Length: 315
Image (cartoon, rainbow, N blue to C red; front, top):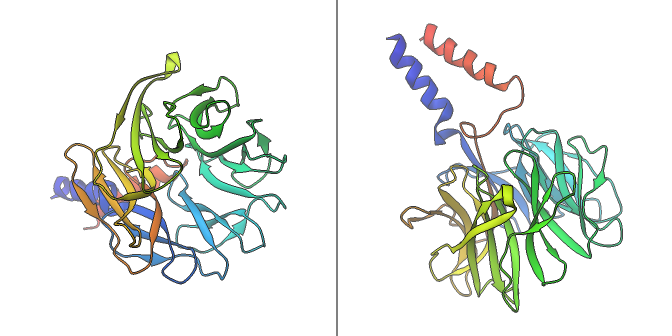
């Protein structure tokens, strides 16, 4: 019986049962952070604050969530344990600090800030120390780390309107990902889990009522895009979009005209659309973590193997 027990234990650890989606909801009359499983079940509120909490993202090991709150009077970056406990301020700065994203090794957090008088990209250590400015532009926001930690994609206004770019993690060798379209704003959604593609949204005039999600396939060694492909989503308004942790689906907030936002999963292979939330309030900004696909911090993998051995010998 040892082999079947081992297989069952391994499946339980790496299956989508252990996938989680963190998201923003207005169901409690202000913006709060919630978590649910990958299928939309067990929706749990994590923050309880009269001020807004939003822009949440998982740490690589799934133990913590970084997010933005205005509870101190301006936008600051916070971190909390995955169950909502131990919430603490990382930035403590009078400027606006927002849209954080964790590096794949868990050691740094990229974010945007206007502390130099313009909105730019910064990085800091995961404890909030050692803040460094990466870009020096008139507008740059929404950084997303590449899976190997070597590059960051972001959206910026340089010379062709709002476009999507990539820069090395040290701020060097910037190149453009999005295709310019007159009167259209580009919003980055980040890298595919395998690092070969970047997804972004093209919105005419920045409007959610006229938006297209586009996947750019990369030739990163040449700093070029091989092709741009629109995602054939249904004809609904769309706002925040992110890769699913499996790399085969996307998570997106959609709505019918005049209605509230809900979170959906769209499978890229066959166009299957699955609704994950259905609440009278609006749910947006999904971000997914999967234990079987994420790179854990040192010490986490041996713990899981220990759990397998416990199930193997103590059934």
